[in-house]
Image (cartoon, rainbow, N blue to C red; front, side, top):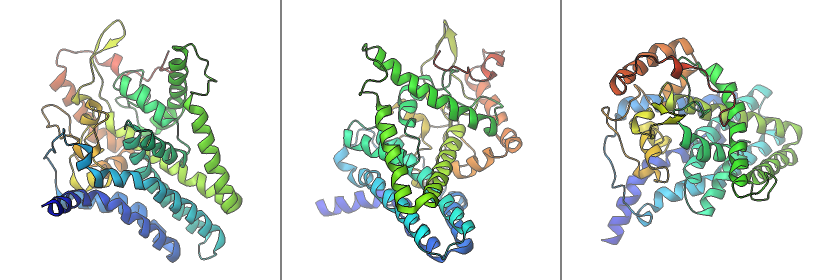
Length: 378
């Protein structure tokens, strides 16, 4: 009976382990070279978009009170990813700089694909890990973020985004009609500033300066410096350049997802600078099976904001009457976001319908459409 139960739990977790297949895939493309290096971005973007069409939607919910000891196969996946990604990233740097089967364009294509993996999977898994209470898992999340030079994402996400989502004080909430190409440079600048201010202010409330050793930015800078130095030692200046390339691609992948998750959705201002509580209606959701396997249920985003510490297999589906739904999964929607006219044609009518559904009493939306305050924590 116990063995049967263990097998059943493993089988339910197995689809989420699909991300592991990207590791032998990228090594195969590294050895093969040529146009094969494009297989990784094609598989994560296009293959999963196609799979979503065939696998359909998952509208079922697990018991949210399931204890961790019944989720060990899910938890093991997120805990294993940090050493797997570390070995893959630095192994590829060594391979690309010590063997001559890859041309310069081939190396660029290979590490573009590596960036897709470390952004689509690595940062996503770090997001899961940073929300857990245990120090071990949080450290794994920090290591993953250091590999893409985006360590401050932890502070920004936990201290700023979850608190201020859907308001002008959240850099990551994309405004109505704000194209991704305007959103991206803005969020790169403002999220770093808001993350540092949040940690500085947190220390100030304890009468400590920002230079206090408790400031996690010291850990962020130390880990990132170590990752850069290791890339340089393994692959020289070429290795460092390839490391920076994958980091840049990973950050771009993350912010594409951030752009999609809350585009045009705002919390109602109730006066004196205060906003209503965060509700399921303030996040876009997608219940497409295949892309949720790859992204460990990230697309059940409303429930994540409702219960940030809830592990990914327990995130709940919210129906259309309580939370807005995307027409496609993230693989399609992030691609659409790269083309602002297409994005606006698909999403702006949905934002306007959302406004009519949830806030029929608001007749003037211009204050909500304004660009983000340049000092989000002011």
